[in-house]
Length: 444
Picture (cartoon, helix red, strand yellow):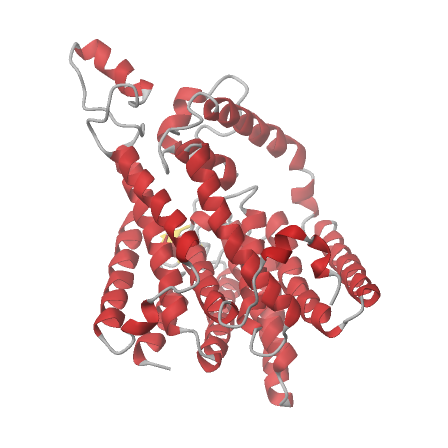
């Protein structure tokens, strides 16, 4: 593996260290580091690998969405496109303002930088981590980094420090958060790591390696359980289960055995989740009703706002600035909302429906490419299975939270998908059957 590959792995392993990377200064530092890596790769002997053959139109859709986000933040657009908030602000001043499509251009540009960083991580995963050895090291580094952060979190709880690195906790005093501010985000990070551990364990042959992986999995699993994150624990069970299911679907060639594998893992996963919910997470289960009512109110207000500007959107990443204008008396628990706690609704609200659909189509195309290869081959596709499990774990949890907005998670998922795409598109047949015939996942 090239030296740049080692540097990129170190970057991904260290990304959760400064508060999950979820501060503006760390967004900028991540962008600088990824930009430097891209320039180094383009200037050196790896420049040929930066070509994205096979990803032409999905990449074009991604870049088109990025271009639209930048247009949203530009001042001086035609008056018909300017957000109504700019017109309302200009009226008391008695003067015209150089308004934009976005209600908060600065926030939109910051979100564009984060999306561009994710695309850079995908590209670097594609270029630097395409070999079997590099992809094995990627999975190992994910497991080792998560183990280190889990041990830190367990030590923090045992010693009663109640801190996140150099910061005293403002909340989650009884919950494990490791180096993340939010317990839910560490739980998702742990879920991705457990998927990597499950895949490495399936391929382990030496008893010592098996024992090390089992120990690491137990420590990471315990840390995730002590986050007391309901959705986090659920996806931490589902992610390694999905890895095992994808392996079983390849081995079990007959559709009856495939259905049996699905049923067995589904029952085992539901049993594990139910056990966690009604033992360690029992106090938090009791609060589901009140929290659900508050979130449903936020979703309702966001949904109504979406249809006020369905084509143009209110500005990508501008939810925190927009929501005070939408808030009504139905919200009584939380004084402020900086996220919609549903990244799909929030993205559609910010981008507008055409750009949101374009982004979703590009991602789904990539996932289907990976899925087809994962269902047909077992050798040399370990990273494909982990990428699918990791992305789906983060995506499922983000329907209730916003884990894919956290750089330590989004950059890791993007790098995994880049490495998986490099492996999948080098081996796959046309994927149109995945769309035309869903039964392809149950038959040979």
